[in-house]
Every structure is written in C-alpha cells, then in structure tokens.
Image (cartoon, rainbow, N blue to C red):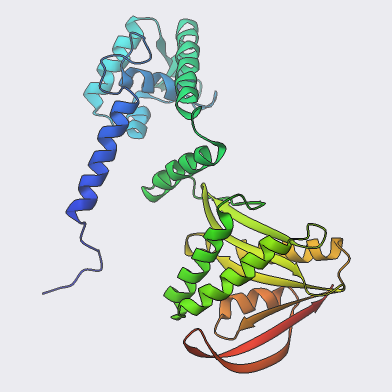
Length: 315
C-alpha cells in the first residue's frame, strides 16, 4: 500500500471551518435577498465591484469575470443581463480587439456603485469601531492570514517594529520558553532566565540607553529583541527571537540592525551578546552584522550540555 505525505483532514477542523462560514455569511448579511438596504443581491454587487475597480485599460470580458469569480457561465450571464436592463453596465468592443466585448459601468452604474461602496465601508467601520486598536490589528491580521493560507492573500508579507505594549513582555517570555523547548529541547529553567531578564528590563528600564523592539506581522507578535546597558561604553543585545511563521523575511537581521543603530545613537562604543553554539541561524545573523566571537565556555544549563559564546562588535 502506498503512503501519502498529505495529512488527513480532521472532522473537527472541517466542522470549525463550516462554523466560521456560517458566522461570516450571517455577519455580512449574505443570506438576505438584498444587501445594504438596496435592491441588489450579493452576486450583483460583486459583479459591479469587479467592473468598477478594474483598471481603465483592463476592463474585463464576461468570460474573464467568470474566471475571477468562479461563477457558472449561465448564472453570470443572467446577472449581467439583469444589470444591463437596469442601465448599470454595458458591453463595448475592445479598442484592440473588436470581437472582444468589455464590461463597463454606465454613468448610472458608477453612481449606484459609489453609493453601495460607501454604505459597505460604513458597515465595516461600524463593525470595527467597538474594537481596540490592538483588536483591530489582530482581526485584520487574522483575515490576511486566512486569505494567504488559502491561496488568495498577499504573498509579500511586511512586518512592523514597535515599542512593547502591556502584555508583550509576558508574551516574549512565553515565546522564548516555548520556541527553545520545541526546537532545542531546553527545559523550563531557560524560561525562568528569560523571565529574570525581562523583569529586570521592566523594573530598571532606562529610556536613554535601553530599548525593546516588538515585531508584528498580520496582527501577531512574531519576534523581539532588547538592548540593555552593560556599562557606560557597552550595550548588550538580549533575547533575540523570531517566530517560525516570520522566518525568511529578514526579520532577525532587521532586529539586530535596529539594535546597532540605537546603540550608536546613544553613544555606546561597542555591543556584546551571549548565545550558544547550537543557535546556528542566530550566529549567522550576528556574524553578518560584524560581531566576532571573543569567548567560549562549556556549561550545563537548561537540561543540556552547551557551549556558551560571547560575541562583540565595535560600534
């Protein structure tokens, strides 16, 4: 019997997706005959949207529109005919191919679409208004992840760097403990060390010489790093981590660059960091940023036999 690398889809996962679909159709009123207190159905409004937002030199044909919407040809033809009868859209011969008929909105169609588009935006604004800024970022980010995972979202993902907010320091502790346990088998004593470092940073924070960056992608915290004062001339880089979901985007390199830029601006003469030789990806980032290995020592920590390393760079 052959084997397949594809994981079986769990019935519970299927049920959860269906539950979300039912929630979403109810949320946007897709079960109603008409939307936004108008005389138009959801399919009609979607056809108007696709035509209205097409580039001026790329008006779609009925066939192309069907490919985009994945709608049955006969059903789409009836929708288009109905919109034509209401003077909302028209078919014109393409200026480059007389046999190709382009779909374009009439003046009446553009006016109707403008009203519908404004009403839709207001409906979404009302939906988002009760949420906090963090809640909105999380919601919008989750929507982007859903689209991307299902093949429709933006593939060029962009992260943002920001200052920590309430709850972030606890999350940094949690993620460091979890990632190093999963990827390197380190025990809970490493999380205890991280908690000590984070706690000291919060208690003794000096904004003139210390900083923490939190990286966010699609509304989710996916990395962070800290710079703390070692002495008057030396800054120390601490707790660099990047979530698996954000690797390959250059986030680790960007976080280290921000640390170096900050340290120079604050007048430090050099930067140091402590790591372990098993953290190969992190060491590559440090080396690429100009750090040099200055000290090594074997130690037993976090349930493992490790080789600790001190790296330094002149600023």
